[in-house]
Amino acid sequence: MGQIKSALRRQTEGIGARRIYEDLRDQILARTYGTHGVLPSSRSLAGELGVSRSTVTVAYEQLAAEGFIEVRHGARPRVAKSVVGGSKSRAVDALPTHVVPLSEFGKRLRKDPPKWTAPSGHPAVNFRYGDLSPADFPVLAWKKAIIAAVTRRPARLAYDDPSGALRLRTALQGFLWRSRSVRCSVDQIVVVNGSQQGLDLCARLLLDAGDRFVMEDPGYLMASHTFSSTGAAPVPVPVDRDGLQTARLAGIDARLAYVTPSHQYPLGGVLPIARRHELLAWARQRDACVIEDDYDSEYRYDTKPVPPLHALEGGHNVVYLGTVSKTLSPTMRIGYMVVPLALVSAFAAAKQIMDRHTPLAEQEALASMLESGAYDSHMRRVRRRNAERRQTLLDMLRRRFGDRVRIEGAAAGLHLVAWFDDLPQRSEEALVRTARSKGVGIYPISALFDRRRQGRARPDAVGLIMGYSALETRQIDKGCRLLAAAIDEIREQ
Image 1 (cartoon, rainbow, N blue to C red):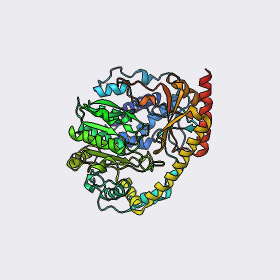
Image 2: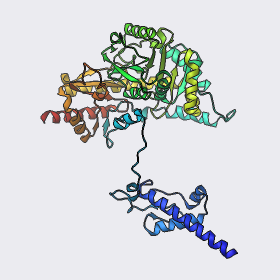
Image 3: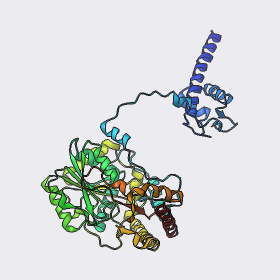
């Protein structure tokens, strides 16, 4: 009897080892682990699969014998370098061709996905907007705050308020009042995973399929994509040097309007007080909500701060959005919303359904920096540094291009728009390729114009959105020199 059981066990382990071998082989061929990818140890994989270690060892020995992996004593198995070739793998070839049907929104995204604006390779100078300089990050202050947050013994280990940690919301309440004249209760503040989640909450709670929403044109495409995910349709309204042309709102019925009034993205206009009141009056008349994205209001250079929309009429139909992505780091996904009192419970419930709450350690650390004044000190320092970068970029553009460049939106924020009116828009793609071949990442503004709006096509000239907050002054000088060389090359063609 013992011999029979032993034979059955060996047979079962043989079948198990064969299955493990085949699965690992297919994963290796599909480049799941990549060249020289490290596989789990036999002990850990056996524990995960619920089999004996000897079963996994048999599978690994077979993979090694066939040259799929390399095994060394005391080290975890690695994918053999010779395995990953240039042709398609057997595992990829064997994938089924059936495609799961998508929603209408999914179909639109597959056809025209949002572009992640990272250039191929690593350009020596990257003028991409939104990146920050690692040298500006307050390492010591954040380290101190985060260590205190994670080492403090918690009163309990449980899910927290979906609206955010009370300590952070209280600190944000004071910060918003003193920095932006936003008066609100703590209950009106909802902490989110970056302003993008705030936009998603607004889309889910304020729009239905078939509704319409107003978007600045040109404007922030990620907001438009988010609102469109509900089945709602954008109504593009043009902007000028002063921001949204509110006079054009007359006759437009929409449930929501998304605006960047403090520093219009991307053209940089500051919405005048008269237009602000006109926008709020339009929203009141139609029971619409205004989404005020105050994404980089901390950076003002040549203009005085203008009161946010939320501060003008009590914020009864305004959702105010803020973020630390432009002050601390875009990798730190912390944002905040100030919502009308009547909508507090709905936003809190939606946030809970989405992800329970934003990670608490980061919330506690940010609250600590706000309370101690470390955040304000950091802001004063980076504001000075970015003012220097901005001035360097302005000086270098004027030095390299003179009156051949027209600059917009430089009075605030972390970017400007440089127009080259003597370069036709059709040369845009060639300029991007030529600049990148010289080590410069540049980003045309044409992609941010709504193609569907009648009466205004994309601009006739090349316009570039030039972010400078991740660059040092010497890089800005070099980038403008290389950009000038690329433009000269395009003009000669």
